[in-house]
Image (cartoon, rainbow, N blue to C red; front, side, top):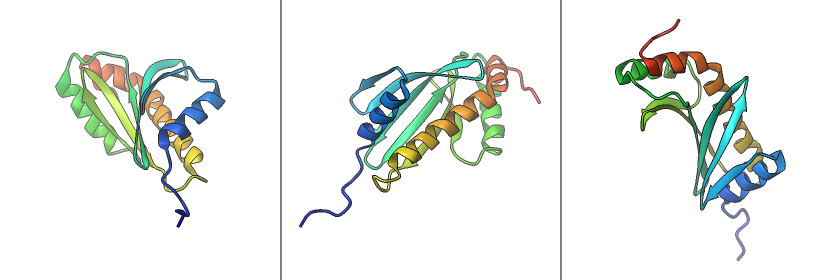
Length: 139
């Protein structure tokens, strides 16, 4: 018997979405890398496609020189956001969101929403993220 709703291929959904948008990206199997530009800010976004889920990582370009301050900022911002989490990895502040691909009908919309939310958080906190990476907390 044929499966009524086969698992969604997140990599296929993401590739189609990025191609339609005209975004330049590099695909490495189930991992995608692209540069995001929004509100005058430019950063790398990495997407990992897993079975039924896409993880989106927005990587702020500022190098973290004060890990304690950067972590304190991440903790503060995590208390203010609804979806996702800020953390420090490989010397940068990263914001991760994800989406669950429950069906093929909503997969593209859910993927676009996860990318947009991630971009809004990274660009919305841009100045605070740069300051926190450098060891300063802004109000």
